[in-house]
Image (cartoon, rainbow, N blue to C red; front, side, top):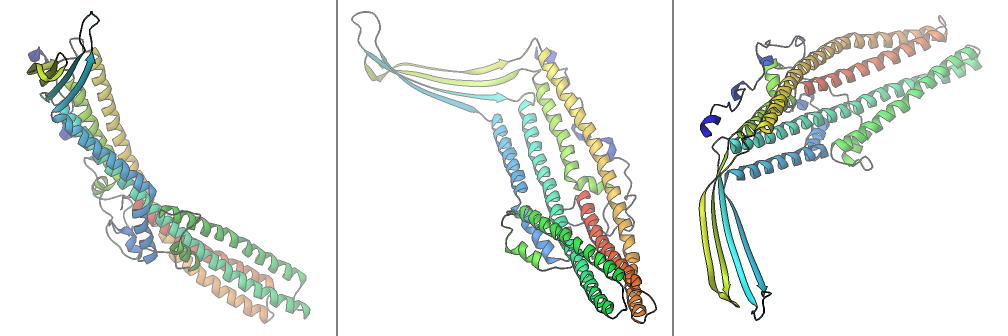
Length: 453
């Protein structure tokens, strides 16, 4: 029987070929890598040189509840590994029982007996079933660690995005407030000029409409600040009901939008596949399913175990201090699910199909990762190109406003030119602030796509 089973293959796919073909012949750099100033570091947020940002991410990586859940999953997986390894060890069972009774026949005395037993067994892993199950559980623990890394990437990125949104809203709020103050002064000036006959009611209405429009943007920016504070509170393990003094101080003390200050190589596509936790998770899952398929194949073979038993019975009449019987036994045992192995073979087919699905899922994950990285780098590069022109636009708009005010005061132009110049300056400053924020957000998104944590 054993000779007949020896010809059945234990695995259809060799373990060393676990990596799919998509990783072969990769290009040396990303298509949109040129001009992407991204230092690849485990602490990429330090490249922004913003102590508040660094502090928030450090707190989030220690206190975030999602990371606690991921760590609990790792602990469970490691406990499963320890439990699975015990299958390679011996197993013992002990029993102890007492009985007091009398026979139904007449003139019988009450008899008391005490029985005990000890059994031990050990399975000889002749066909690798236990070893494969242990390997599968170990790979499951490694997959749980990669899942935690993936959560860490998301948490650090979300924290940085929430902080950038906070600083961006504060900057845009400051721009709106400064322009509102300027427009309020212009409105007061117009009121005075109206009394002297140098302005009209139309000028007043136009100036007030622009002033009120600017004021209407302020609550919108304040709402973004409030929501960013709530997001940061939760990301750092706190409650939105009580954000904490450190986060509330961020709300009260405005600082510039964080911008990347250093420039390094972002790495190659090959290094990305080694770094992205979701790619590593998908690759580990292939190995885990291969090991589980080996477990199913081992069911084609018998299970060989060695057993030992010791039995004793105390009691003679109504005395428990006498040994009435003692027995022992030891020897091998063979358990086989055959000869009808149709169900076993069906389970093997299922296991192979699940492994094939994992291969295809890995391929799709890698292709999607490359696409996401290329899109992220392209968006970042093109958004960064806008900054210089927007900065020059702000300077030009500021100069135009100064000239418009001078020409109005000298009586060459009416106040409509001043209003138009104010509107242009406000729009240019707001676009520049939005561009700075968007560049930072795209930088953070690129780090997330590159698996930086």
